Length: 89
Image (cartoon, rainbow, N blue to C red; front, side):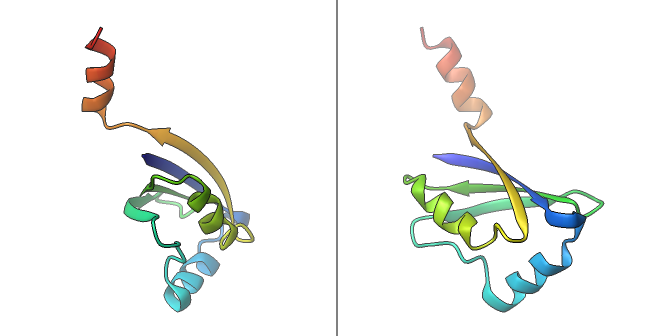
C-alpha cells in the first residue's frame, strides 16, 4: 500500500531534519520503502510517498522523527487504480 505522508516541520525549521538525515539517513525499518518526496518552497512541509504492506512500520519510522516533525498519514492509490475501482461495477 502507498501512503502520502505530510510532514510539518516543527517551528517551520527544516535544518534539524536535514542534519539528522545527513547523519543517520532515512531511519526507515526494513519493509518500508521510500518512493519520492517534495518539499514546499518555504521549507515548512515535506510531502513524502512511502510504500509498505505493514502500516506498523510507518509508526516505527515516524517515532524516529516525531521530535522534529508532526505527521499526517493518508493511504493513497494511483489515479489509474482509483478510476478502475470506480468503474469496475
